[in-house]
Image (tube, rainbow, N blue to C red; front, side):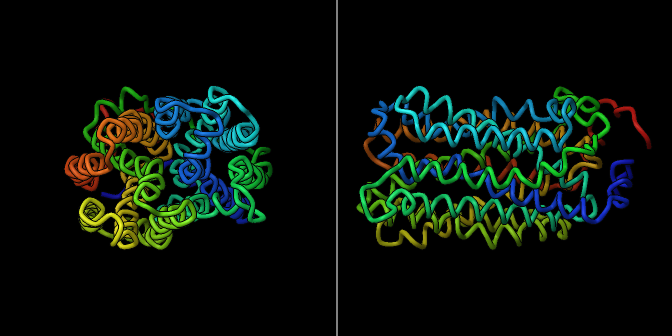
Amino acid sequence: MPPTPSPDLADASAEPRWRRALVLVGVVALAFNLRPAAVSVGPLLDEISDGLQMNDVETALLTALPVVCFASVGALAPRLATLLGLHRTAFVSLLGVVAGLATRAHVHDAGWFLVLSFVSLSGMAVANVLLPSLVKLHFPDRVGTVTALYSTALAVGLTAASTLTVPIAQHGGGATDWRAGLFAWALLAAVAAVPWIGLLGRERRTHGASSSIRFADVARTRLGWAMAIFFGLQSLQAYSIFGWFAKLYRDNGFSAHTAGLLLGAVTGITIPLSWFIPRATARLRHPGVLLNALMVCYLIGYVGLIVAPHGGAWAWALLVGAGTCTFPLVLTLIGLRTRTPAGTASLSGFAQSVGYLIAVVGPFGVGLIHDATGSWRVPLVVLLALCLPQYVAGRAACRPRFLEDELPAQPDGPM
């Protein structure tokens, strides 16, 4: 059953080419900067913890902070977009990323470092929720292709932060300067804000996207919960990996530089897959086949890390990295399982806010389990076991249907 047209979708086709091009540049630049705030900490976690004299709880909280921000602040994104407009909200979110990243690199107190990390990650959380709605609003006929573009940009930013943070921190061959390694990403985020300045003048609204389909309405749908649980469990896996795998590698005898490269392998494999998966998802009638392949990668990668963490490290890194590509899969599904930008904004906000409430236990729990057992084997077994409910929820999210068809009462609007 084809989606019901909406005024937003019709307006998109009449939009000037230069404006759509500027939106596309802005979306790609925004996506590139949505992960360095989180993953640049992992390769330098020991240096940051020592430099700020963090205790074990503060260190574990730092690794869990990205999902805490997504859960607590991400839910506000649809309402902010209604009040300010999508473009202004995206611009403000980038300013938050820049301000938080730039200032946290210069503080000397663990508490302030956590607070400023929260600021930068909150900007990242808001933008993360808005991206699917921006794509649905401006490119309704190319959801798969544009999602592939910004997913790839996100993966490139993720990989760059994973692999380049340590070399930047070790510039000049001297001692590791973790502050320089973190500050560099603030400069790139500032550059990414430039295209959005040109989009602030003529703000396009989504006709009350956030208010027409309420959070509580989505909570009454099976699709909303399937998407939220799937999103939450894939995020739990991903942020546990991004937060702790660099330390896992270092604890297994690898240098800080090699650990960063291994984490780069985890994230690097997501670049080509982030281009392929959204486009394939949009074309396939049953995208569950992609889910099957990705979850098998998780299975083999985790088992390999448990059995031979050192000898097969590069192979397991690539396989686990492939598993994390359930993220571009779920992002594409959010756009495909809604009829309008209103539905996309609401489903994205619900799935990400509820999903990150689920995910928040991942990085924090992995850290606590590791501290309690003194080993990485038990945390890896737990992550492996969580692949089963993630797969079940993913299969439910992959079934073809639309959010608007499951709402308890259809929102008022043009038919």
